[in-house]
Length: 399
Image (cartoon, rainbow, N blue to C red; front, side, top):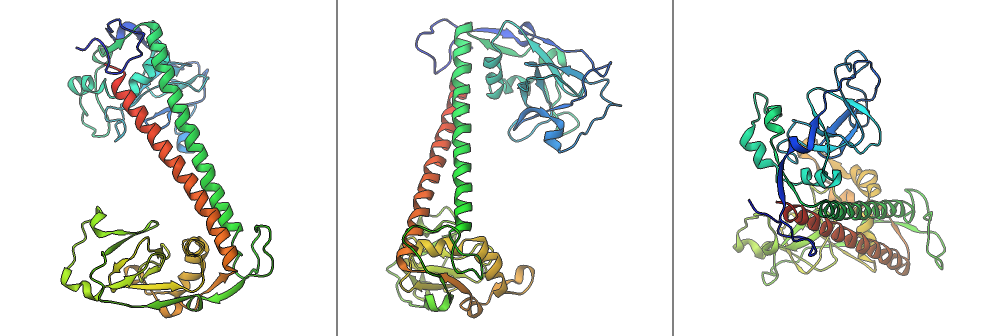
C-alpha cells in the first residue's frame, strides 16, 4: 500500500495510516420506537441525503411503519446499497440537513469519531473504497442492490492522514464544489435571461413591436412571407468544396471532422447542393428543430433546401428560426403526414409570415444574443474545467 497520495499539500510529509472503518465509526442501532421523528430521509447518489418527500414529491413511509426505522442525526453517515451508474456499489453520504430524521432499516447508518467528517465525506465520494466492496460483497439476488455483511463492511480500510491534512483536503474539495455550484447557477441564470429576452425582443405573433427594444429604434415591425425574405437556390457541381454535416442546434461541420459515421458515394457529390456561409438549410424532417445555419462554405445532400437571405442579419433570423414561436406556432402548420411520415411542405413554409425590421435593428439584436451566447459558452467551459479539476483531485488526493 502507498503511504502518501499523488497530489499533496507541500507542508505535509508524514506517512498516512490505514484504519478500519469500525475503528473510527459505530453502527447506529437506535430505532424510532417512540415515533419521536416523523421525517423520513432517503440517500440519493445524485443529491445526497434529502427528505423523502423532496425526492419522491410525496412520503413513501407513514407513521404506521417508521417505528422500526433507524434514527439519523446530524453528521451521521448512511450507506445505501442501491446501485446505479454513478454509484456502482451504492452511495455513502453524510447527513448535512442540520436536522434529525429516520431511514429504512435497509440502510446502514453509522456515526464517526476520531476523524474529520468532511474529509471522510469526500473520501466516500471517490472510488478508492470500491475495490474493497467488490472483493467482499456482491450484487446479490437483486441486480439493483449491493450486498455486503455488516461485519465485513466495517472492516473497510480508511486512509487517515494527520488531522490538519484531513481538514485541508476536505476544505479544498468543498471550495471546489462551491465554485462549481456557483458557476452552474450563473450559467442557469444566463440561460434564463436568454430565454426571457428572446421572448421579449421579438414581437408576439400578430403584434407589431417587441416588448423590449434598443434605444433609437422606432416604428412598427413588418410581417413578410418567408419566401420574400429568403430565396431558395440549387447550385450543383461543386465537388471542390467539402461535404457538410448538419448538427441540430449547432449548424454545420465538415463531414471529415464529424464523429458520425456517415457513408456516402463520392461519385454522387456532383449532385450535392452548394451552400455558402450563413445560408439557411432546411430538411423536410427538421420540423422539430427549426432551420440550421451554415458555418462555412460547402456542399450538402440534395435532400436539403438551401435558403439565402436578402439584406438580413443571419444571427437575428437564426434566433427566430430556432425559437418556440417559429417551430411550434408557425412551422407546425406546414407539416403534413403522421408519425414517422411527417414532413414539411416547403411551398407552404415559404408562405409563413415572419417578423421583419431594419437591418440595423436586426444586427443590434443579433449582436446582443451573440455576446450573451459567448458568456454562456464561457461559463460552460469554466464549469466543465472545474468539474474535471475536482475529479482529478478526488483521484489523486487519496490512497
